[in-house]
Length: 298
Image 1 (tube, rainbow, N blue to C red):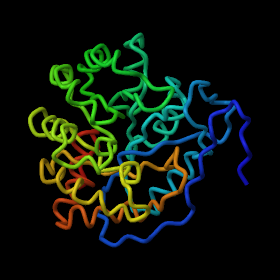
Image 2 (tube, helix red, strand yellow):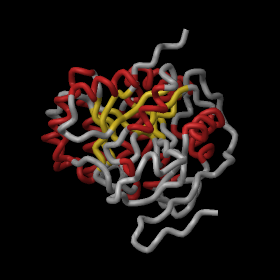
Image 3 (tube, helix red, strand yellow):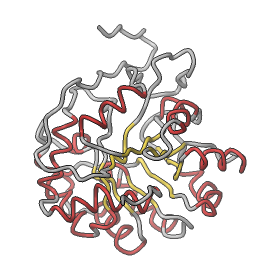
Image 4 (cartoon, one colour):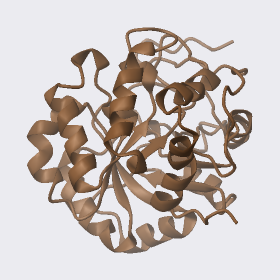
């Protein structure tokens, strides 16, 4: 049973469900879940930042690897969770134990040293995250500085943001020396519609500037729990825009939710969004290989 947090502490998140729906389509070898987080079981060893928005339950390496196995994923990308701020230690330790199958997205301050960036690269980090939605993240002020710092490493910038902010940010984002990846299909309500300025700005970055989108977090942008059917036209419009720039992610352990979602059911949405097996193969295998530098399957 989860304990009740003190009144002045960020709210405690629900734990992920132990069981999940079976796959409704054949998962290809080399499939990659490009968006998940790990949280150490011992909070004293890896302290949470006080400015965090929420308090996650433990989601340690063993549970994460078990989730990948249950969902049929051969590979994974860990994203530094906001509650650790710029302390990437736990994620880097997990990456270091699985160099062939895991990659990471870090969070650093603009003052990070070149030596630290090189150390992170050796551990498997391939990008940095800008997060303006949850406490503990690095914001837009650092965007240009960090992008120029990582350009020589071949990394990308990843954005957790509301795509309704994109139109005003486009002049800056077009000039970044590295590609961008947008989390959770833009993290804006699908009720805004595919003709909205935010969605069109997102399509512009993908189509004309080589950006990527994570087909993840449907439950964060939907009004229909728990089949999230209103997300299907949204996801299909993104896939139609650039199937070679789409990625899939579970967003496990699904933090900051009042109702817990079924990870397997989220994966199965991909069969509706991309009914063509060749397109699904690109989303699950070929695209992550290119972006994160996994060795091609032989």
